[in-house]
Each structure stands twice: as C-alpha cells, then as structure tokens.
Image (cartoon, rainbow, N blue to C red; front, side, top):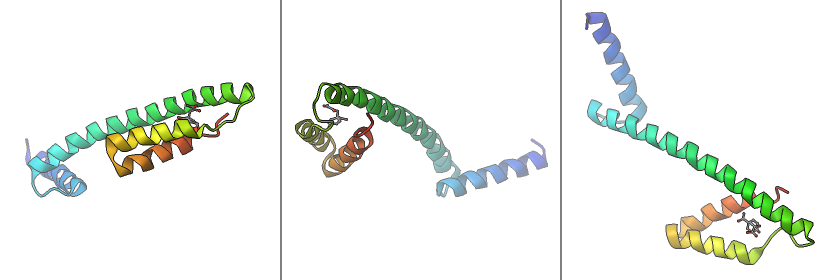
Length: 106
Ligand SMILES: O=C(O)C(=O)C[C@]1(C(=O)O)C=C[C@@H](O)C=C1
C-alpha cells in the first residue's frame, strides 16, 4: 500500500470506529459484522410480519364474510400469552403491536 492508500485506509478505519462507538479496530470490525447480521435479521423479521398480516387478513375476511366479527379476543389472549411466556413482559407489548398491525386489514 502506498502512503495515500494507507491514509485512505486509516480514514475508513476511523470512520468505522466512530460509527460503531468501539475504541479498538478489532471491536469495530466485530460490531460492523454483527450489525450486518442484525440488518439481515431485521429484513427477515419485517418480511415475516408482512406475511403474518396477509395471513391474518385472510382469516378476518373469512370470518367477516361468514357473518362473524373481525376481532376474536379469546384468540388474541392466547397470542399475548404465547409471546409473554416466550419473551417476558415486553413480549406482551410486542404481541400487541403485531395484533395492531394485523387487525383491520380486510
Ligand atoms: O386468529 C384469528 O382469528 C385472527 O383473526 C387473526 C388475528 C391475528 O392477527 O393473530 C387477528 C385478529 C383477531 O382478533 C385475532 C387474531
């Protein structure tokens, strides 16, 4: 590497360190790699949420078309319990947000 390349590389490293909040290059590299995995997981989670919304709409449409109510509270209680059992109290909030996204899309 010539001196310009070394200077450019240093600039990149400094930026990476600043971006991650790490105090060593090693930690900055680890964090950058892990953030890529998180971005990929978040993409998949968003896709799954969108898929859940579509499936929920099919159920609600069938129920409403058959003369029933769009919302089914006993089923919502089951879902809230499942998330709370798996994730603790914040799981309940997550499930409520998911149900809010899924309700009313018929
Ligand atoms: O399972 C159902 O009966 C649904 O309508 C799906 C769903 C959900 O998104 O999980 C949505 C609305 C209901 O109030 C309960 C649950």
